[in-house]
Amino acid sequence: TEAQAADPLDGTAWELAFYRKTAPIPGSTITLSFSDGEVSGSAGCNTYGGAYQVDGSEISISQLYFTEMACMDPDGVMEQEGTYMGYLGEAYRFELSDDQLLLYWTPQETLTFVPGG
Image 1 (cartoon, rainbow, N blue to C red):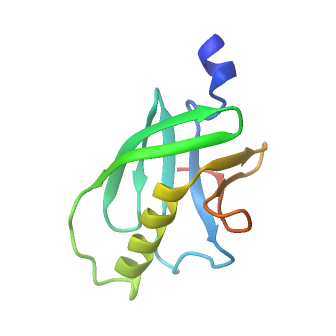
Image 2 (cartoon, rainbow, N blue to C red):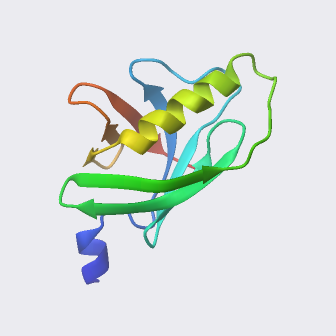
């Protein structure tokens, strides 16, 4: 359909492999799904959602919200979650291939996702 051609992310689901060059804390899983202009997923502790728009290779993610549970385990998961949500909200460009999705929040720094979620 035309919508899918304009939005190659629609209907895809991903799992975070790296932020910057760092893998998520063992025992935590961060996911990201795209559907009908909405993002959703798990930030490792809390679930989140928001809106997104794509224009060519540009992306904007806005109106992010998340549940407000506190997780003690694994250690550091809350800091990781805050970092991830910050980067996600600043994403402005994406690169999509069969086996990965890169979201850039600076010209050199990415969130790297692999299929999953």
